[in-house]
Length: 137
Image (tube, rainbow, N blue to C red; front, side):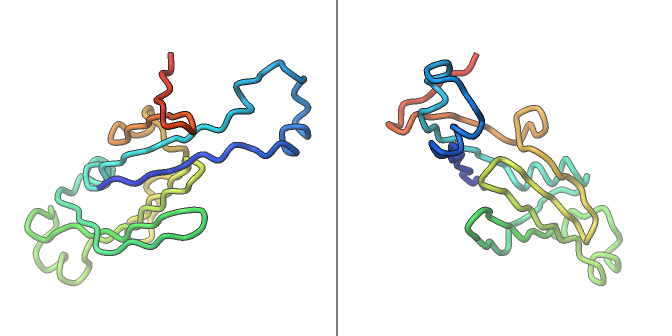
């Protein structure tokens, strides 16, 4: 399962408010797209220790995409009675600005920026508006 998170650069007016010198950083005036691919089941397995997560619903809003997930019963480490009464469920919210929140059964498991260093199940790629890939050093 993967999702795209797009970075929207600041508007010209917002750039002027930041007081960047004219011509000092011309590359900052060019919009870029950040594409993020996330192995959601793999990420939840690492965060929870439970295998075989599945997405059972997805909801897209203006600034984020939320995924409702559950652990399949056949591999849960909990007893069969616990799984039936209290199935493990999680909500993963990926914001378009690169932020992510993961909650499992009401408990926060992750709340922060989604980067390669915070999540090895995420692959970030950057592109010019033309679609040409941007190589980062």
